Image 1 (cartoon, rainbow over the protein chains, first blue to last red):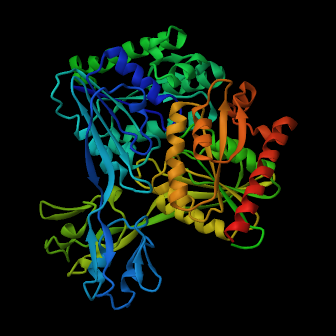
Image 2: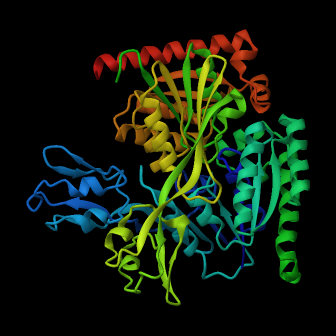
Length: 294
Length: 290
């Protein structure tokens, strides 16, 4: 099973719309949403069945036992994350604590212990299709680990299929790095603007670090033709496979809001996405026969 | 909070909703403002404001350095590290810098004192000026896991600044956003008119409620059709402080990296009016929660 990851460097470029279109076009049996901060894929893929939910334990959080604490403040001095503060007694700010355990280590009175912490929720729909998604709790970190868990849920699916489609997370930080690890190809969805160009350069640099094959398509390319050309030239220069352009389609918002898939409605945008999918699909499978290309 | 000093944070559940567009235009519409880009993974504000670079400094974290002669392979550090940033492989202690959280625990726990700490650059902060706006931009180096140390430094730098500060936050509702809004007096939540927009708005709404921050919503890219984000605001009784229509000209200016406020009187008025509305809300909040 090949894994295709859809990224953009930034949210709002149409990652989820493209991912859901690909899922529909390929009749994909296995897919995942790695945007654990703001998952949206479940809003546009219709899961008829009840999912299996499980708690995701992130790194533990420190807890101070007031009866044992002698108010020496050594824990606060050593905490690099400003997670311990002095009120009437010493307290831990659960949003700042990263669970490193230094406070527990330095406490002379064994008043500090690390406690398990539920940092999010993993969801798995496993029926005729396998869909893995998750939601991180407010203000929790270590989303990279949760992303890895989301991907783990689809590593050995009960269903045999040739392609898994993964909707990625925005940015270039830990959740994205966790998304990239182990995928066969990254498709970057770019938008034609100065921000878009800046964002793709950073995401491509990140993908390069992991030596993943990268393809790129431009969404709403006709909103700024000059920037679109600039992005294409950049791909050319960096030898990134250019998979195509999607025109702006004002019907798209309506279609998505009504819970339908963009490829369900006729139009230039839907046609463009079909072409992009075919070329990306060909490309990702091509690697199987020409392993030397890597 | 000092007299006359206001921090406004601009948030959205997701990127691409118009946070940066709104932030740079608000900053440009206000006299002597400070614009701070806390979206250190993808900072874009400088592409619009094009500030002069007056000052630049690297942001460091500390990471462990191993003295091989002193290490006797006891592995206490490996056992201690909750982030799996250390491993003892082939009689050698290895440090995986990119997953190290710089807690300093390994150096503390080592009985041989074989571990010391070294500075490592993870990104930088630039300071500059763009007409009436002072600009602070944090940039995380690609391949680095966490921008939190850069954001913390930015927040610290903001504390010294008088006047109105506009903080352009990272997308989402995770730890990096929380760090960015720590000192904010008011939060503006930007939302798109889609079901995604409404779902993402709900998340940042939960976040600002959790942190007890006064807030209002700006509905961006408004079309004539039904707006799921607006319906969400109605349902929850959330104040909508502004509505920005979907506008090709604004989109083009923005796509080309221009600041709309500086290009047309119409937009100057639109964003100034929006600021007046926000300032009124902030003042109101300060009376209720001084």
